[in-house]
Image (cartoon, rainbow, N blue to C red; front, side):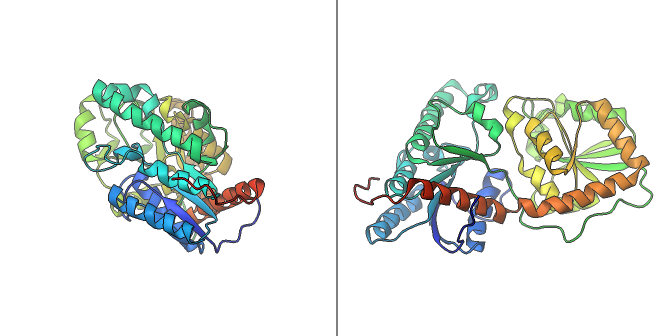
Length: 385
């Protein structure tokens, strides 16, 4: 990918307010990407916030373009909800607002890239968790969102390329590439295995509600070995709703923490876990926690998540296992030979600089610069929006 002059200007769109301190990937990612573009030296024209704020910014963007201002590219971070339903009341009071933003950029000759976050609405759990009325209403706007990308986006960024097979139809004809989450800090030095390692302290952070987040395999694996203690960290309300589904072995505890509160749990852990029952929807997922664990200098043990397993194998940031028996063998092997754990810490530390949010933003800039170069200059006449 060609080198890019990281000193221009870009449009950043997100159909929701962007603020620090998010407690989920859908809140964290837009803030980090926006900050990363600025840290690279881009002058960023934001179109974010409430519908009223985005409408005002759209009109400001239209004026800037009319006065001859140019932008290197436009980048949009999607939401888990369709843009039309992101107001607190979830009513479609401005159903075409965000489509107008992207189409204005596209018609003005600005390369448009969209991070398409999710297609959960195409999987069975969507039908199981929402009433028929809510499903039918939201499906209209999910399809409207997809139609907007078909007409206005030059490139789709996906959590992983495994998501391609789940995309709606008609097929997207532009470019596609993976743009997984990132980290905002690189550990200063690799961790070291604890002296006298006799038990592996493992941490799982994430959802616990089946079928997408089924802890059954994790609990089965924990029962098979007394050489590991497992901390499951999840939202308290979610745990209360599903705790009756699980029987916890004695070496598993459940805690509730988020954001900065998680730091002490990462500090105490020897490695992290993503050990869940297989699920088609999660098969292409690249969880923020997969990268958060790198930021904390820890390797991850993965099972039941194909794209995450592929990542840890390729980047040498952990181990992928296929069964609780393999998990037990891995745990016993690491305790018997702590040098293997030290080597994993070194590999994680070496991988971290490749996965910062700045690197992700630079990938976007380079990709959309290539789009502009292939397309050549376009007239600004006939702008729409």
